[in-house]
Length: 235
Image (cartoon, rainbow, N blue to C red; front, side):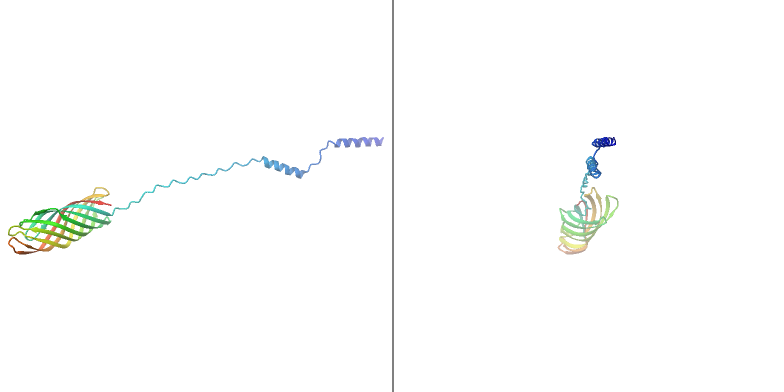
């Protein structure tokens, strides 16, 4: 009877063992779960790359420096003085070119030509032929637009006289001497200006003439002055 019970119990165990799950290899399971987890991981969203916009270059503005050079034209009325008499309103025009080192000092060159003759009060006529000058030009600003200027330099001028009557002088004065002047200049705009001036072209020079009686006359204090209105253009 004991043997029968033992056999039944053994058979029950064997049949029951058929439902027992096989042993699990935990290392293999861990690797498989790790792979599954790796697949399940969601890839991180890509980080947006910032768009770098190049700055718009600032427009290149040309630097305009001060206008140092200038040219000009003057209308002149001359006065020729001798010991025997004087001649007024000798017409002439003068062209000039200059350079301003700054607002206080400049240099200027001039070339002038006569455009007509005038009566000589001792008899006859006189005419200013040509004149040349080179000047240092100090300037004194009075206001933003108005300045006082001086001229100091050297000039050469030629005056022809044809006398009539007994004391009228006939001859040619072609001399050079120190020259100086004074004027006012007004800036109409950045480039244009107008001016008035008085300039002594010849100062106390000598000349030799013949009067109406045929006598040679030596003059040693001849002066030539000009009074003018002009315009300058700076660039």
